[in-house]
Length: 229
Length: 229
DNA sequence: CCAGTCGTAGAACAGTGTTCGTCACAACAA
DNA sequence: TTGTTGTGACGAACACTGTTCTACGACTGG
Picture 1 (cartoon, chains in turn cyan, green, yellow, brown):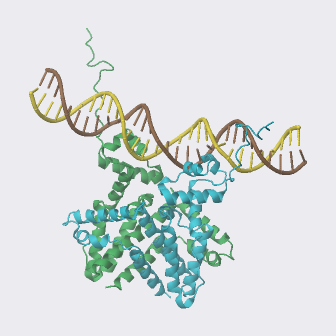
Picture 2 (cartoon, protein in one colour; picture 1 turned 120 degrees about the horizontal axis):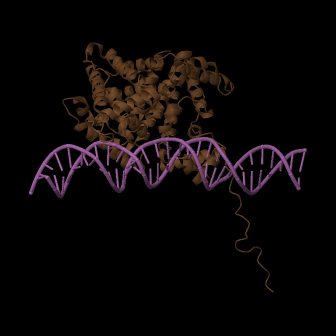
Picture 3 (cartoon, chains in turn red, cyan, green, brown; picture 1 turned 180 degrees about the vertical axis):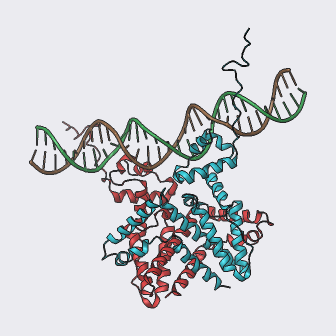
């Protein structure tokens, strides 16, 4: 006689519990959404959906959306590697650090648009980065005040230029190029009697040269800080 | 015999039409709301309420909320006075222009938080400002590329520092001071073994000195641009 | 075995930006 | 004078948001 199956359809044990929610999983999921769909697509409901739960569940682990973004930023800031200060080449080390910080910000979709609102370093890895830059500036011989102002303006350059670049973030580089072309065409078309320089410099103003604009500001700032030793 | 009244209740002429809606009135009302209640209080419904109409009415004059903010910014940028370039003192003129731009941004509540998203000058007065700065930089002898990069980074310094200052915008200066104190206390309380410089420089990092931080960056940038003539 | 705690999550709340559909009115042509 | 057309106004509706409320199940300790 054929034995009965262990369970009947409809009476199976529930599927094994999915992984429990955690702050880390929520933050990592939020970052994944930003990378694939953009910052504007990020919502508490969207994160919950991706985790197979309800929006309200997230609030047991994260206090609100602002904290979520703060934690997402901290996660990406953890990718910034830190160097030991070398007084002989502190200027190049400062530049390299800011380059790495910028690279990290712009390699996660348009997350940088959220970075300006969280520019005061209060999370572990944001503090790590601030501490590292301060260390490089002090190794270079700057006094306390100059070092403090320096870390301020350097991180501002990074987040502001990354913000700007993120604002034209599109799924494809082709769209970004088209956007630049539209701006250039617009500048060339404004009334030349009122804006002669904007019209004549339209090409230069909108020249898409990747990091060159950022490097320009970085050069000037670091050279200027060096002059204050 | 008593004569009939001129009109009967309910048959009076309607009240005179209120002032018709216009783009200018909508934009001015939005700015007034930002100044008194803050950027976060601004909504299409709030603007409409203030104008005694419905939110949908606004869309006959303004395409969406982003355009509204763009027009509000242009309105405040119209307050930036423009100077005729003087090659003998172009550096001081550049600084003065950026100071005026910053002052205009930070004197309208926390509007500056919207300025980063609208940093590409496409409105008349934003273009006026860009044209003016280009004029000063060209009067100083900078080549086209340096002038283009210069106007970029200078306006970035203005909008980014104004953004940061706006993020701590509160109704009273007392709250702003309390905020700075909380940040300083936080920095002093982080683990000193991991963040020795953040702890020891907590006072300098959070010292509220108004425009001093901005002036620091401005000095370095303008001096750096001058070196590229 | 039961009370307490915790995590989960649907429902609800209060709000948002924007579009749809309708109405009143003005301008114009016949 | 009448009919037509275009425009601005605006309530309702749509689709969405962040966050809180409330109920429930699982787990733990006494």
